[in-house]
Amino acid sequence: MLQTIIAKIESHHRIDDEEFLCLARESSLQQLGFLAHAMRMRLHPEPVVTYVIDRNINYTDICVSACKFCAFFKAPEAGGTVLTKAELAQKIAETKELGGTQILLQGGLHPDLPLDFYEDMLRFMKATGIHIHGFSPPEIMHFATISGCSIATVIKRLMAAGLDSIPGGGAEILNNRVRRELAPNKCNADQWIEVMATAHDLGLRTTATMMFGHIETLEERLEHLQRVRDLQDRTGGFTAFIPWPFQPDHTSLASARAIEKTTAVSYLRILALSRIFLDNIENIQASWVTQGPKIAQVSLFFGANDFGSTMIEENVVAAAGVRFRLSEQEIRRLVMNAGFKPQQRLMDYTLM
Image (cartoon, rainbow, N blue to C red; front, side, top):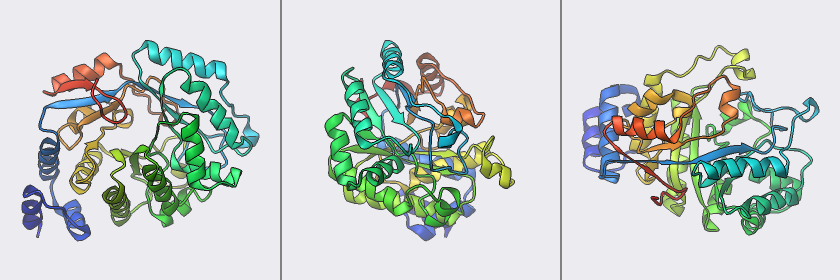
């Protein structure tokens, strides 16, 4: 059956759930890399690897979600912070000085900030001329809850205030068993999809992510990929998919369970499987923030055609003890040393 599946992929046909599971269980790392790289080169025949210069601004670390996998959040009574406009302005100015084109804006689910706080923050930031890639689906759902507005109304108001696109954070694994155990106070899998579908219908482009390597099964990883592929079939609104492994250090989940860090081999297998299964999403992003520069470089031969962001600032993964840093020059060198041409892009993958 494995050889039949490989032949099906090589003839540019979509694989189904059973074939994905067979491929995941029985194929070698080399086979997966070969298939994923061939698909990557079919979708992007020019030997170009893209990247974006941006900064991840976490506007608050105060959060009521209390996700078991997060080492960044602070409970409301624990004395977290909310960034001031002066701090936002300084971070944006620094980003633009480094050639940055966008801000990745995300934060905790603050219990006391009203929807108009976020609208005011967006208007202030948008006045600088920067692209705002902000507010993951759990944040959007939180805003809808605290405001009593529909998801569509919330997104329309945020768009009117300056929101340009939505990141795919907060997806974790799009399976409700996993989400109930990991983050019972966060939106469920169906709501995550609903937010993204609504955003796409309103004309916003978004990304999608998957955080794997914790309590999920292979079948639940497949459910995640299937939900993303199904929505992309309907809307075409996802610009990229980013799988990245759970970072266990300093998290309550790792304290309660013996969860080891995902190996480079396991990461590369999931990256390749994502490229093969998500035949309708053009771009797959390497995760150098969690894997480091060398494995990210190898990722370019396992389906990734995008090196992600320079990540001028990153706080959430860093809170789990992982602190890789790369400048634009280092990203360009890594890409060229792998035999590709580096090219800066915008959020929608327009080349600069």
